[in-house]
Image (cartoon, rainbow, N blue to C red; front, side, top):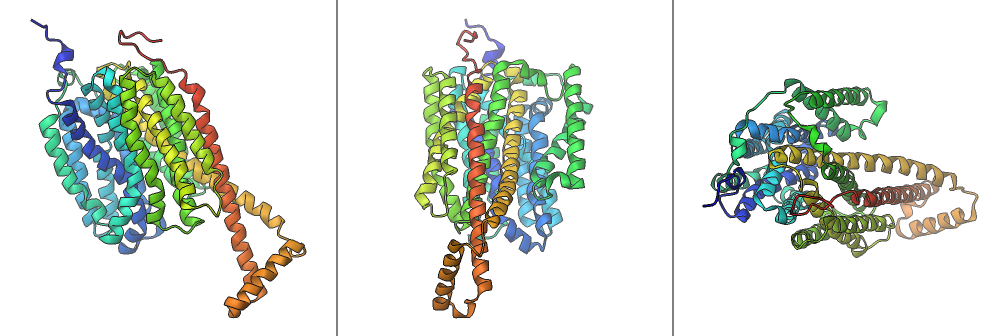
Length: 520
């Protein structure tokens, strides 16, 4: 008779694919909710009579509460039980979505978004930990393909879906669509998800100081990253104060967690080489990827006059490519392909795609812009799946929830850092190129005189009432700004491509774990 072990008791009681569907349905809608609201902000601003700086707190409040919950998900799962905490998270997220849609004022909406972030924050690490425990080690690549299809595709589809819903119905339906999905998720989790044995018998300790420093540090850091560019970074007393609070709190958090025997977030997991290298890769790689995805719609709408919907369609091919390549990558890992090789290939493809974006110009057509995004989507599938599988391959099951929370936190923070870096570099390089181009616009140069006469002649033919030197100078200056911004986009894309390429040698430090548990 076969002996019953703790491992056998922790095995899923239902088909692994039913478990995967149960945890990915709420995770997909939660991740999409981060980006789906972006395109609705102007409508929310007008509907609730709010200023631009005020309405952006609709995004910031969600990101802050979300970031605080993610790293302590493993600890909370131990307190409530993983299944119970997953259900609590879905219920809080769903009820908060109803409150967001029905919010009569901006203040009510922001409070509801805070609770929505608190409810949704645990869904990503919980779903990843459950998938890694449900699927055998040999199928972790496929498990991460399923996870990646949700967390990578959702933020790409978010702006497209959000724009369509806002234009067709209203901004309130961006939140109301979460209600049926939340109800479905509650039913699926209730039926198919079960706690492993070790969670049921775990003794819980309360690390109050670690939790306090984490909440203050992560909260302040997320606000700095989200508001920094708008507040002109360290010229703002508000940003300087929050940056100091974040630095001190996170330093004290690390010191506290390394000394306490029962930390709220176990940082000792970074002693695992694969986990350490994997988190460096996900932080930087996801930051570069997300930075480029944020820049692309700005380029299309600001310089190419695309609508929000058409800008979203340009992102579509990359999302579709990722959706199809991720399960293929998972199958290759299942057949024994070294994840290091796939990761290096994915990074090289991603770096190449962003390098292609650095060659965009003001006459680029739709396909010229969409093809690099398609290539990037292929690279992303080859990057995320093997990286996630290799990062967790030697993590004990008892530490899976804790490790997944850290991994997802650094992935999200990487995206925030990537956006902050990209928008800051874009602004600075635009100013640099503008100053340089202005110095070379001289009314005594023959080229300037010829172009001025051409513009004046066109105005006399088509808009005689505007045919004067002032209008000519305004047209030339407007074109100068477009050229300066285009050069700034080129520079920023090039920087992100270089940073992505620098991750290739880092990926070689990942070890491939054998079935025996040894590594090569």
